[in-house]
Length: 206
Length: 133
Ligand SMILES: Nc1nc2c(ncn2[C@@H]2O[C@H](COP(=O)(O)OP(=O)(O)OP(=O)(O)O)[C@@H](O)[C@H]2O)c(=O)[nH]1
Ligand SMILES: [Mg+2]
Image (cartoon, rainbow over the protein chains, first blue to last red):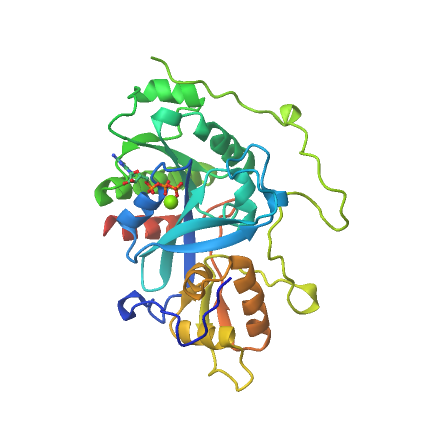
């Protein structure tokens, strides 16, 4: 913690202020392994420069399978980047780029429970990193879509092959994206929203 | 080349939880460093996207954190943004806000959370908003 006092903290720029009519917010979680492009995706669609919220965890919380080194005395800071999209004068959408390891998720109360849904970002060079994430979302009943971030040197698999590898049912969308491009990231979010809408329709037919 | 294959885990195949130091009051690893309780040991039900708005000018007794919060929340601001600008962990901000809500220095506008039956018009509003991007 390094609280610097009231006068030295830079706040939001005036153009980043939400209108006074803003009364509610929803969130979407973008989850994936290390370096898969979470921050890039948040940044490409956010109306504000991505911000970071941090939480600190004692060493007891760091699993034995980590790569934080063997110094068991230190606390670990886990950072989560997020961005914002104003939907209407009343409604705001927040996007959180969340580390893939479930042991970090509890740090932010209700991060997944309260989210509309999630985007699982995957890198085909390290597909197995996403297995655990997908399993956890399934267990928690968090609806999600899969976005394949197309790194140039990554192996390309047909979507059907990826679906089989990820053991996902036909109805869960899997799409390719380039997280650096706003239009592509927007497509991913729209795919998630259409999927959520279809789920809602199926639960309560019009 | 074929991709690696995911195997579904079933609850029965869960690995046993890692051994824990025998310590009182510790429910489970991992541990958050700042689990600080508010007044009466309560934590207000504050979400990352709860919008906070200042309701008053800082009282003479305000701490620097409280004054900064009131200044930052002149316009509605999410708890996540507050945490980022204050450079304080979410859990610490939660405690700070619990106090300030009790003292009626700030107002909280609750987040909309996923329900068993999602509100279709809400989803449609989000879709329309995204389309305009
Ligand atoms: N070619 C390509 N590069 C990308 C894409 N998305 C991200 N990158 C690059 O990949 C690197 C990692 O991206 P980040 O957005 O920082 O990934 P992250 O998931 O936030 O990483 P951590 O927070 O460190 O886990 C950066 O250098 C990006 O420029 C993409 O779609 N295509
Ligand atoms: Mg990142």
